[in-house]
Length: 143
Image (cartoon, rainbow, N blue to C red; front, side):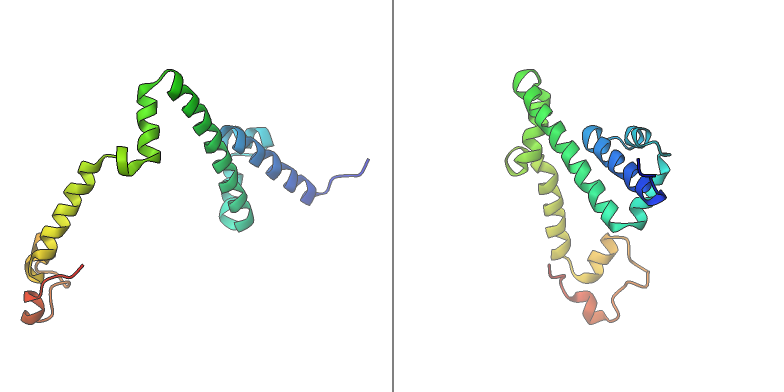
């Protein structure tokens, strides 16, 4: 039987970690299954773009699985879960539109103000961000 090298063992923990991460979407569980401290995968992810990409893919697989389960449960037993799924997948129709409308209205009102008044409304009066000239202060803000 061939002896495993350090590089082989390193690859082995990564594969086990990513496999378990894809199944459970839980870093602590995946690290335990891979036989490493939970901080090691975070360190490797920050240092190695290939591992970071594999991690992201494993999480996407796990979330897809959770989403399938959620759809099954929503269609059978949970109106609340059904609402959340509709909001997530059809935000334009089922999302919380009032928040967007309030923010849009506030932005439109700010944009209609002369620059100096807009900066004052945003709390920049008296700072280095004030207009350089009086002419700049009277110009409306364009989107």
